[in-house]
Length: 442
Image (cartoon, rainbow, N blue to C red; front, side, top):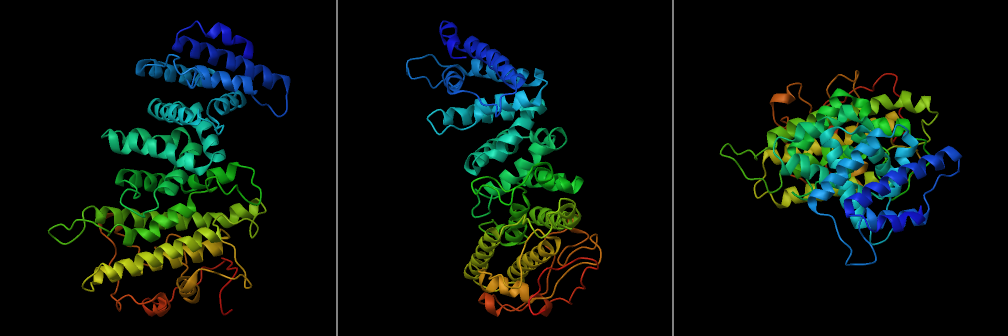
């Protein structure tokens, strides 16, 4: 395609970009039809894309697109992907346009990609969302969370009432929805107010998973998996990020909240209700895994939760517990309840994750999670006789109530001194039929 450059130079910027997209479509169709393996766009074509679509030419005086022309280009790109019926061609085009090359054009790539995907969400362009889902699987997580941040800003922050538009991606492209959840749970780690998920986003994610628990497993179910994913990519499921949200939320959402007249924190009851529902939904997803992993021949061979992320979560929770003590001038039952709720959720999540095969461990495994994890593993196994039985601390009336009230306990002490969960609650029976790979002391 390198020989078409001279024909593009006299054209205005929009016309040149449109013409190049047309030739790129033909070029990739011919490449796929020829059976070239692997199909790969050559460097001259990538140079043309950078010059005439991304507008990062060597000549700094070259004309650039106006905002109106850029909007028109986005509409042309939407139509181009919508009209191309072959998914292989669409994926190769998307890769040629937006795969990061490690050069100065990458910022322009990210800017154009973010606007294109945001427009695709707005007008329901499923082919672009499907291509973006693949891009999110293959791209460094730093750039994935940047794309997620743009979508959250566009649909949950900047334009009031636009949330339902983003909500529709659940039905339009479940693959993209799954990758989006993984990206936002990576982005929002609850370490600060800025990194706490907006309430509208939280409501959306809870609704998606309650409607379809298998949604968060779609990438895993539809991707050929090796023993390990590239360390720089997003996790293969959002389960780790969702667990982090549920466990840290009781303490993180209390931080720096303004007190209302009745003493509760602004927005806290809604957040508590949503995180409680999310926690139950995540446990239900874990219960789907044994059959799925067995069908794939992966039970006991592939961990969907990595030990390193569990260790990081335990460390974060330990710090939050310490901060809760330091910032509380007078011991309150609310503070104790929030701390206990976080610990209970950690215990429940780890135990169900191990039983379902999502978290792998053995008697000889050396756990470097410190005293907190020793507490969790030495406590009783709090399984439920039926998955529809609410876990400890989950209220069947959670949709109308704040954080469930737990019995107060002694002020927070170093983790090793915390009483085991059975000191507060009656032991729960094992779930019948559920294998449990490792239980200390047995």
